[in-house]
Amino acid sequence: MGDLLTTPSDSFLKRRRSDGDRSRAAILDAATKLATTEGLKGLSIGRLADRIGMSKSGLYAHFGSKEELQLSAIDTASEIFVREVIDPARAEKGIARLEALGEQFLSYLERDVFPGGCFFAAAQAEFDTHSGPVREKLAEAHRRWLGYLERQVRAAQEAGEISADEEPAQLVFELKALLNMANSVFVLQRDRSALERARRGYRSRLEAARG
Amino acid sequence: MGDLLTTPSDSFLKRRRSDGDRSRAAILDAATKLATTEGLKGLSIGRLADRIGMSKSGLYAHFGSKEELQLSAIDTASEIFVREVIDPARAEKGIARLEALGEQFLSYLERDVFPGGCFFAAAQAEFDTHSGPVREKLAEAHRRWLGYLERQVRAAQEAGEISADEEPAQLVFELKALLNMANSVFVLQRDRSALERARRGYRSRLEAARG
Image: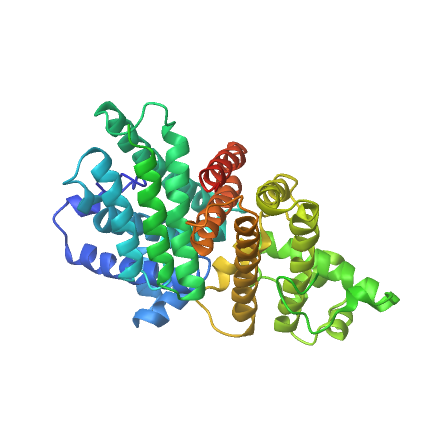
């Protein structure tokens, strides 16, 4: 499932974990959390070493450079997103799965899975005007999440639950807009009512799309 | 009008401009543009001095500190936003003004008024997990823009153009979500179709709100 939002070159989660892997996973978990409050740009090997009480040379043994660390943090954040948002909705099908994906995303914000809101919203806003592999990996994760949602819309259309008049990319654009807005208002204004507003908007837009 | 999104302590735009003011305005114009590509955090006096070919000491004479420069850049960005998005919609009333505000916002993105998309979306995502006067000023600008849109919804309701069943804050949340999504997809994916998707969603949501 780890390749749903990005395509990690190293599918280490599927191997039996060695001690080195476990340590790498713990480091990356801390790194993704730090990135949502300090920024993915602020995720230097030195700052992470301070945060987790590890030597810089120890971190260099895991990640050769700041960019390598940032790319690995994106892979880890993708795995967390799949586990926290996408997997819990798999039990549902069609329009119910789309509804569950919205709920799970809002719950992922509400439960502070990352301390600074959605990892991807924060990182994309930081890197969107740059070029290079970090930006490309983030843009790819964004396209994959939209693509996944579009496939759910088409499945719901095939099941006759969503009107054939709805263009999947347009409907997904509108639904995802509400989830993004929940994140930005929730984090900026520290106002939980944003989650409820997004929930109402998301449900009523899905209701209007019924076939 | 400059106080619509923020409350600048110095209403210098209303006075006849001295040379010092003109120079200050030109510096701040460059500063807001730099902030949308390099980040408002990246807006140091040193970096701005390099960019505009002015001495650091000359900039220190205008702004005593990096934070003072950041706060002044937010005031300038508010004035630009009012001039580019809010003022052109003033000729319209009621629901037509809400429609015009959406169009003007999308046009402000399309015309690259700032090279990195909406100044406020970028700056808010950067500072939303921080505390201090920069974050407070950005959060206030956000509330004022939402408040302005809500007043337009209420005016349209009083004119009988929008259903009394619509809760203004909810409708504004949904409309603004589409504008934010246009900005984030347009900047991240460099895809102009995001503007058209937002336009379609915005219009059809307003249509559904008619009384």
